[in-house]
Amino acid sequence: MTSVLYDTPGPRAKARNWLYSGIFVVLFGLALWWALSLMAEKGQLDAEKWTPFVTDGQIWTTFLIPGLLETLKAGAIAMVIALPLGALLGIGRLSDHAWVRGPVGAVVEFFRAIPVLILMVFGSQLYVQFTDIPSEHRPLYAVVTGLVLYNAAVIAEIVRAGVLSLPRGQTDAAKAIGMRKGQTMAYVLVPQAVTAMLPALVSQLVVILKDTALGGSLLGLGELLSMNRQISANYSNTIATLVVIALIYIVVNFALTSFASWLEARLRRSKKGTGAVVGASDVNDMATGANSAGG
Image (cartoon, rainbow, N blue to C red; front, side, top):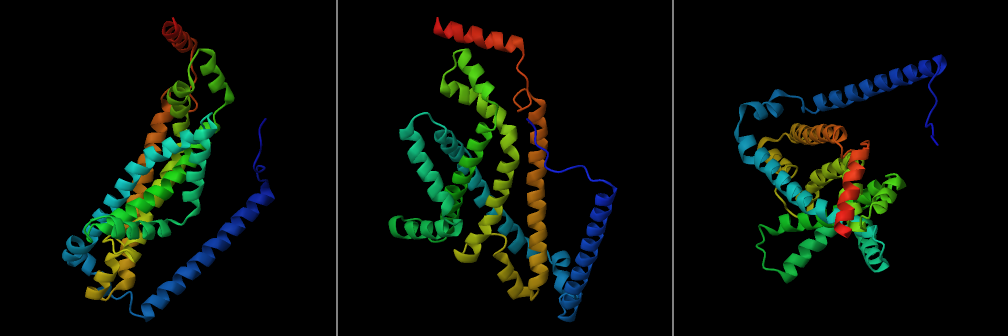
């Protein structure tokens, strides 16, 4: 059974689409012109606001590069912890045992329901009250804690949805050759679901990277966006600084999504992709291995 999301547009529909697109482009151009005019009136387009990013290397070595490295460090630590933790929670939600499925589901729903900023604040207070972590390292710990708890819960749902999106016949075939639930999950379902989950996982990794800015605004983490305050205080160019920081975020996230697109294409070409077809020889080999293990 197939479903069609929309009909192929006819001549009149195509004309309307071109008209709507033209109207949008004109309105967007007018809005951009208005914003630039307003910035020019306030002196925000003056050369002295922008030239420090080209002529003064200190603005990069003292502020932007250290802030970017702190952002990447917090994001990378959170990703490394949240990905396997989320995968385990997602698999736990698919368990046949209610005593596993129930508590794991409660944990996932609990942390999905709480804003990540509140988790960061709670984490910071817990580290203040119950640990001896130095104050200069505490913001990083709190930010990573909040990111891991929230995003692991979201990733768990992505993993669960990816596995459930596979045809039921995959599980039935694995059972038919004697594979246990754990083997089916590890060798059949999860590898095939990876390519289906990859776009959503990459989107969540981008969210992790951007949410590090919350720690800079509230907890004092020296990440990229927080450097705006110091640069603006020294160079009096708030708008220019925010534009440059936004461009850096765009470049980093574009690199992440480009790598993910390359990886997804590579996985789809391999036998582990969701479109892979298991041949008769593969089934015979798996059946032989299962019979040998049983014998």
